[in-house]
Image (cartoon, rainbow, N blue to C red; front, side):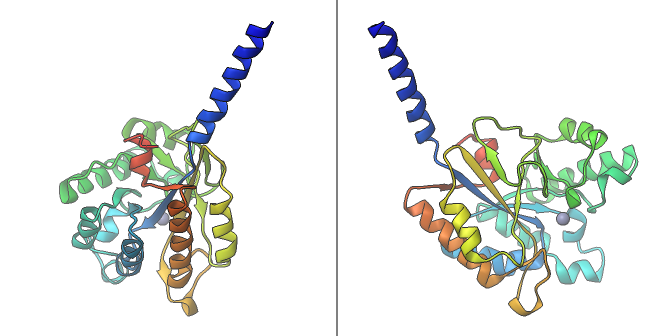
Length: 251
Ligand SMILES: [Zn+2]
């Protein structure tokens, strides 16, 4: 009886030790490859000494029209981010709702963005964020054949992923919106439980006076980055790119 109790005590201690060892991970992801993600986000994150994951719309960075040229970064700028250590992944070629296009277009959207990222940057984009967070069974049949991971825009676990039970095709993201306060978002980071992988999702970063609901201001982003870095310096969390978590398994 004593022996059994000892084994149980050992098992539970070992279990706890394992859970404690896996400190939470935070990943900063940015969608679309807006110009402001190069002009504003890159300097903010570089100053803080961290990098993130960028899901690029390859047609927009090709600057095929003046609107794209004005609003999105160029291939040269994206290359600079990649060389600074950023993890560059796919957000399709032209950003359609994938559930509403036919099979050959769907295949093309997924494959062509990958091809361009390989040709222009020399990167293998193995992960995709589906535009508008729209996907269904048919879309996922294509995604699972062509990619190794799928990032949602919303839904599912809302960004609080479990590192001990991770489905790479259903990675939830926490979309940071204009009306979220710094205290709210930083509170979430400081309260993260062990084994949690929190994946932030950001879009365009703008001046405070011109903000839209799904955007954040430079000031807010800077404060969220700063408080997250403080938590990392305290040893409570780790900041990683999607690639470091999924491919390299560095957690
Ligand atoms: Zn998008």
